[in-house]
Length: 174
Image 1 (cartoon, rainbow, N blue to C red):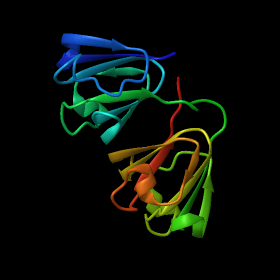
Image 2 (tube, helix red, strand yellow):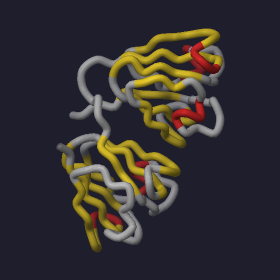
Image 3 (tube, one colour):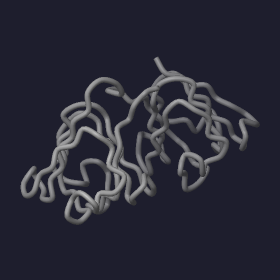
Image 4 (cartoon, rainbow, N blue to C red):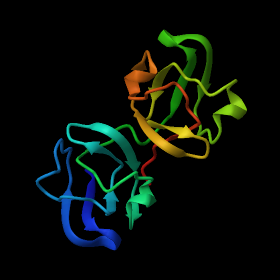
């Protein structure tokens, strides 16, 4: 059971809303979100209702303003708790759609795709164990994409507009 608290203003000020379950539409609880406190669990936040738009993956901790969770603005409209955040982690990535082409398997974080995988294009992925987050740029920066256990035949399956991945890491609850 997780717990996350959203605040309308920076530094945990203003109107707040406490959440402990998935919520497809947060609009009626607050008009903007400028700080967040994750008390337990791991969460994915979405810029738009119904789990759409930019994704932000947050683990336990304090985020005094939206730049601390790499937010692009103060809009958070839906959230859900992430499962598979403990135990083993295994991920297979492919440089072609439908699990074809060059394949590499990982069980650890990757701060720079370019250093290990020729190029940065990942066209398909199979998450065998755990939950992972892909980042658009190296060193865990840029747009984020949550990948939970399952098959992703094309990069559009995890919500990306292009196959460029700069880095990725495991989502672990502390």
